Length: 76
Image (cartoon, rainbow, N blue to C red; front, top):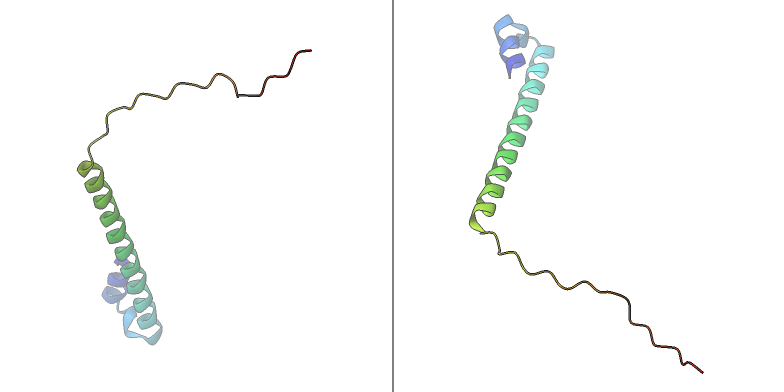
């Protein structure tokens, strides 16, 4: 956005090349602004969702398995 202001202040935007440069600067600034707005919206949604869902109580862990069950061999 600063580059667009600089082009206007110095008069370089009055030429055809300057006009296209000005349009390019404004397009890049608009894309960056949209990206920042999107990231702020995602951050706000993430904080809203985490605040809305209370933490669940810690569940008791399942007992650990000692060994896999294998059929016993017949002793002769």
